[in-house]
Amino acid sequence: MIQHLTEIVEEARKRGRKRLAVAYGQDSHTLEAVYEAYKEGLVEPTLYGDKKVIEEVCQTSGLDLKAFNIVDESNDVKCVQQAVA
Image (tube, rainbow, N blue to C red; front, side, top):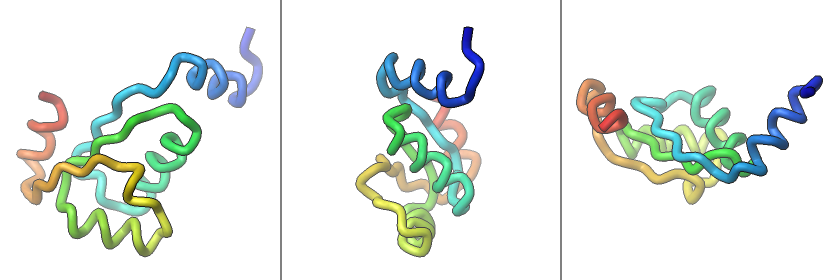
């Protein structure tokens, strides 16, 4: 029986990275959370959004862009459509 959050993370890590699509996630809080999940070995993230904005936020926040697959799309509706396709 799982009793601590660390046990949940460990179980998820055992199952391997899962694909994660993030539509228009261009703010520092979202990118930092996705980056942490990537570093923990939990996700293989694809970000849908304005590439320049994502790059700027990553640079400001000290995040390694190599962790993300970025699909450059500035239209928020198109981002959502592509992320769920």
